Length: 193
Image 1 (tube, rainbow, N blue to C red):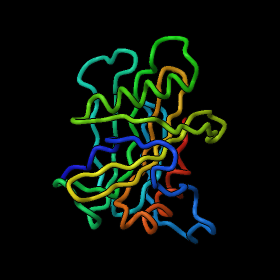
Image 2: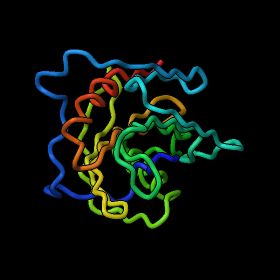
Image 3: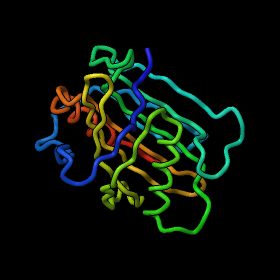
Image 4: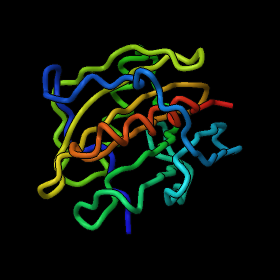
């Protein structure tokens, strides 16, 4: 079973997606496993028991192109279109060329990510500046639908050295309130090495 692609339709402010923030108070304990990539210099935790899938670009990527992706999905969770919905993903891109602002580069990253997915429609964005462990980036909340399943998601774009990272957590609208607390704790452990 595949993981549902993590970006399909971006909604603007007021699009109905709840404010996405770490739970208060955070869950007492989340059982987590760790994945580390020495090649792409990051480490991420994900809920124990979730399945992992990876892909690597077959050739040297040009600026702005995907070079590596790893996804983690809950095999006991919601399924839509034959794929797991409750999932987390780290996509690593060759940093886009050009001297644009970090916001412009982050938006270019999202556009490059969405371009490889079928039937993607990007709407107005609601990027919010963030800092994650002293690395600046932008966060984005959005929702999209696969079949009859509404999916809520949050992505964080970070830029560092030669790479751009898109870290995403998503769940069905029905399971968001139970899944997001687990994902926010583990995504909060994302570290650039």
